[in-house]
Image (cartoon, rainbow, N blue to C red):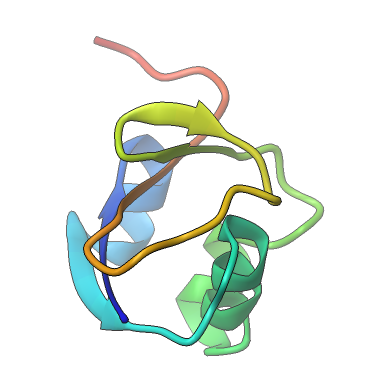
Length: 82
């Protein structure tokens, strides 16, 4: 399924504004793990030990939120500036 990823604040600085990804992940947590498995900047920016917030289709969500084809997923630190 295709998922639109958006990165904000320090994550955007590390990974860019976003990307479209063809993913097999069923949940947000599985998607995050898939991105971490890429290694490099993705592994550092999205590491499990880091405080990170996620939104699914512009609604705050946790690791268990189910993905669907065409979902928009945003990753950002818990506090961002305006």
